[in-house]
Length: 301
Image (tube, rainbow, N blue to C red; front, side, top):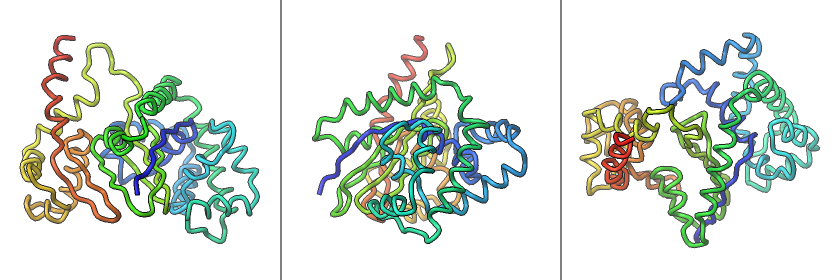
């Protein structure tokens, strides 16, 4: 059964993405913003609030707000969403979670209150003061990508937006909600709930400084400048390998291969074949074929 792709964006999505990017220490080295951004932002918050953020995000690890954002009927700025979210009764919270097949904890209302507390603090201390051009750029990206959908190319649009993630139809998946995100670039993050999947994909919402190369070009050239990554691409040429097979072929640790695959995925150099719980990788020629043109356009200025 084919799935339907919908583009969606609201500031609250990016508010949560930025908060999770800030707290998620395991992803800091993989993000474009990296640890310098984290160090800069953490000076805005008292140590007790930083600790509270970490505690609440750990508590709500399996309690995604994406279904609630998608279901919110009105203002979806950070403040507008939180006003609606906090007004929901326990029954309404359970109804929305149940509709998306989330496992519902017994203390759902308490988790909602804790999450709302931390999101308000994050919005007041950081998100409300970000460059408005980021939000404008993400909104334009979502509108532009939505205009490309014609009812027959959902899988292609998903793969293009995610720079190579190929999501195959399944018996259960019916709706895929694609949301552009800026703060966690170049990561692509997905959450699956029975018939629904939410995927936030990387978007360079701000243009590069005058005369500087675009972030996408930098990711591509950096990915190709490493011997191990070139060797991985050689293994994937004409083959479709899973993670274990790549580790065996390259002969390095799983953590090292994971790091290299993140770089290759960020550059759009591999296709990630995703079907159920099965994931494998192959070479994505589109990125390689586009490289000469991108370099030429940049050098000509």
